[in-house]
Length: 468
Image 1 (tube, rainbow, N blue to C red):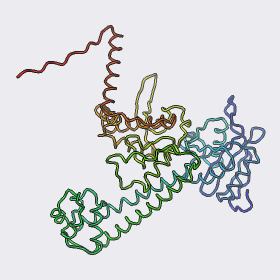
Image 2: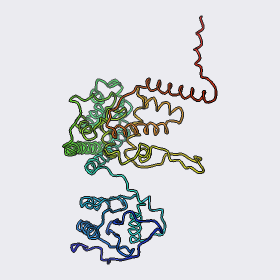
Image 3: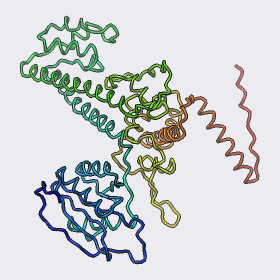
Image 4: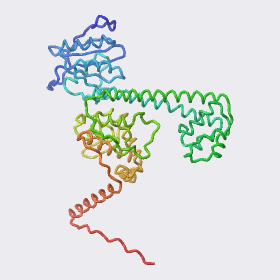
């Protein structure tokens, strides 16, 4: 243990190693780590079928001391539980020192009974890892981790800003200012003009209504009626503070977008960009107030990093594309097949099978951010004139809207997997072409089925129209 460290003071322990009978260890140079807020317990193999267990502190000098201790014992690979965010500093230190780090989900080993202390925890992790019984959790490439951290922080900023929009709406309603009835969005151009004028001291409803944008559907007279209410000082004060907080988070979002764009510039800078000089324009109806500040620049970076244009996929925006890329990375070899990929996302059904019969089939709940982005993409193509939209509408009639969204997200995820794996561009298919392909496929299936049963499928002529 490092001399600069003051915690913990427990001594090194040598215990008998656990074994699994005739099974052989496939990773003899494996270590196990149990991570806590104040101390870290490490276990390494020793001679004569024993294990050495030693506690360390959680300071930075202790993390380097752990790496030195592993070097002394010839450790090659290290397994650790994903405990909160406590594992991140140790994981990064060990990864920089050249160790193969395996992040293990606590859910995968908590079902084994009999472990009551941290000492037994690290010993059990080392034993399972040495026999190759632990599967490492997915973690994208190291150069995309910084980008993923910033994008997750940006999503949190958007979530923190949303309640203040609701506070503004609630305060206006308490004064009987029915702005939400005449405007679809109070954060739009007209809504922000009116709210800022109210905070500045304007109370005349006709002067406020004159601030409407010319594209607003409601007339000035109707807006003026909605802006007639009781101007109570306590509610005006709340409105002022809610607007200030909304502006603060908006400013922080802009700073975050600048930092994200700078991070893109240093992510794989030596990779050439195959994007054309003039990228396709933004898709119709894809305007969003939460869109990144540098959309076109980010789109070029995404093409350079991934080799394909994910924004071209129906249902994808720049925000969704960068979220998915930062969560899944660009190396599709992490998943042997597309089925493994969709199962990891939680978009494939989990079947309970007994005796060759499916007892129950359902989609497992998870908090995978990439899966949430694929579901958002599926929700945006429900009425679109594309293959995904036609697929959703067909599945909706069979399974209902909830399961149809999951099925469409599964279809989009498969498309993205093959794009990233094979480096192929997205080819858009209209809903009419998709419906025709599906109809031809069903006809071929029915012909084969009829021939198998000894029948012949004969098309019928449409009935003639009645002559009036």
